[in-house]
Image (cartoon, rainbow, N blue to C red):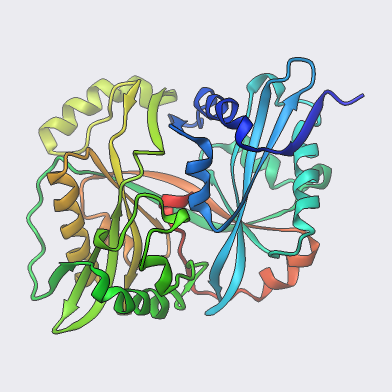
Length: 369
């Protein structure tokens, strides 16, 4: 008789899921605990208009011992609109990581996949989490295929450090309802040049949208040449429904942290916060720049950095793929770099679609991962 029940979660599981993700930090050199107050489901719904949460229960105790999410939303594949999935939020209580629980969980996802909403999924795994990367890449026990798509860099930029704005003739304005069509057009024409860039509609930015919780068009920053919008990006504060706590450090980072912080203070670099710190941060989101012009991106980043610094945030989070030309300009800011691996995940019906993907630079929306 099976020890576990794996099924779709509902609102009655909210408290158990919040506790599960809080108690099981992401491991690596930096141990991060995710808090999802006041509601776990408020946080996951930003992943897309369609989202499912799977929960594994221990039948002996009734406790939630594992969870993961499956989301689907429109995105650009080879420049064309298609439905693209995301598998994320995998958390397992350490006491239940052996045995067949993971295999059973993926069999459940395989059955959900039969709704044919999508053929491809994306997922990210922390680069130095070698055990998980090796396991999921093994294709054992009916696991889907994990195709390595390169490194994804999350730059944690210190918002408390003042920076001289980049020189240039660009004008940067805040978004408003009269600019919604131009914002949408900029996202669309540049999104087509990227692989996996989300497909957004004008209507999504015209009014409050469930999967853009606590975001509105006024959070956009627009770079203009004359009267033309040549780049957009936004500052998205998710602290009302997603919180991040630094639990601690491991390995060499734990040992050298005191010395590093001394050097960082003298050299104007971002410090490593104390274990237990709540990381007050904001995301740079919806990044689209005509021709990948670095001066345009710098102007947007300068504007957003100034905003979040004035509002008292400690960090600005910027996520870009290793091949993204904009990454070089983002690295000009004092930052720490957290590296993950991007994977394209598929079962047998997605093999040909994966094979057809061309060499466009990948883009993931960091704020919804």
